[in-house]
Amino acid sequence: TARLAPATLLAEVQRAWPEAAGPAFAPHSQPWAEREGEVTVACPEAVRAQELDLMSELVVARLNEALGRPAVRRLRVQARPAPR
Image (cartoon, rainbow, N blue to C red; front, side, top):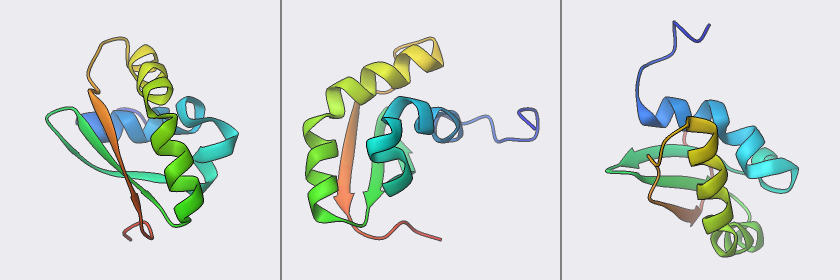
């Protein structure tokens, strides 16, 4: 299935997200956009969005480790439902 996924940074981040974000955030958030290394993450619960924003440096480090390169510069967390 990895060959069928789009070859974009967003697709790579979405595949690595469950492990990088961990059980506290992954089930409650979704990366949905990327531009120049800034990944926008939707989180429907405002409290979790704020927590994820505070932990974003750690999550960015985990994402870059999973990707094998420093591709993600920062997370932009939004308290909003994930787009469909």
